[in-house]
Amino acid sequence: MSRFRISLGLVAALLPLSLLAIIGFLVIYSWPAIQFNGGAFLLHNNWNLGSMYANPVTIDGQQVLPGANYGVLFLIAGTLLSSLIAIVLALPLGVFAAIFLAEAVSGYVRTVSSFIVELLAAVPSVVYGLWGYVVLIRFLGHHVYPILGHTLGAFIPYFSGPTGSGYGLLTSGLVLTIMIVPLITATVRDALVATPNTLRESGMSLGATRFEVVRRIQLPGVRRVIIGASILALGRALGETMAVLMVSGNALNYIPKNIYDPISTMAAFIASQLDSALQDPTGMAVRVLAEVALILMVISVVVNMVAQLILWVSGGRRRA
Image (cartoon, rainbow, N blue to C red; front, top):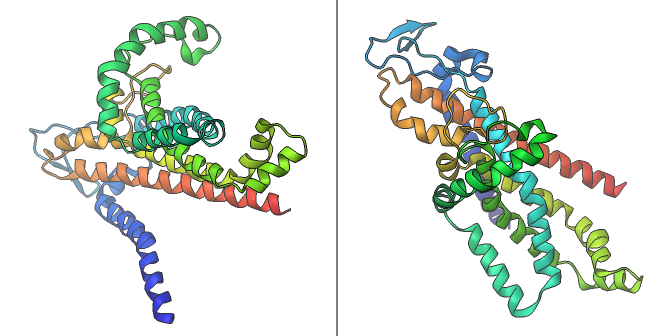
């Protein structure tokens, strides 16, 4: 029995050890960039690889190209804003869809609908990106955004201003929403279906309607599942690369002034800039991209820690 426990412990330890190994690699590899950039790296919008055809110079003990300067505030803003839009839209949609699949339909319709939802969760992100590039950008830019700017822009400043051609923050958020809704729906639906029938029958016997049973009994019982599914979905939104790269507009050194402006996210920026960074003979540009990846990793870890804190606080309140 002890050998079995030790084996399981070693297998379980692989996950946190792999996370520590990834973080350690990023810290070690990007350390020259961290020393070169300092704290200003997080506060400025001045990404510039420098002159590729000039001889490298030494600054603060690090070899870089002349004119090289790095700042990623625009990447942090684009990543957080697009992910925030996605989770704000996807969470209610996913929960309502889960309630519909668990309580409003049954039999063959539930089976087919649940299969479709799980199939949508497995679609590669580049497919969503291509669909967004071909269909969504043109439709939103020509038909939806002008209406939003005319109506909501009158009393919500962030919706006013030029609506652009369809690339940008809101389009990225919508594509991410479509990608993460199936994940939330499938997870919450399974939890609702697993709720004991005795709880539903007890609520009905007390005179509660079907909606009241769901709202007052079932949803509070799966609160931890909803929070966990939301964090998983938010993690996917934060780290999404190709889909956002194809619809965001790839803005450089630019923080969006309204919800239609083009953006760049950290994951998409790493993918788009890697080829150019590899041309840097000093290797500093690639190390700076590794620093961007490290920041993205830290944001993901912090988000998960906040989620665990929320679960702990909600669990303590329920016990009290």
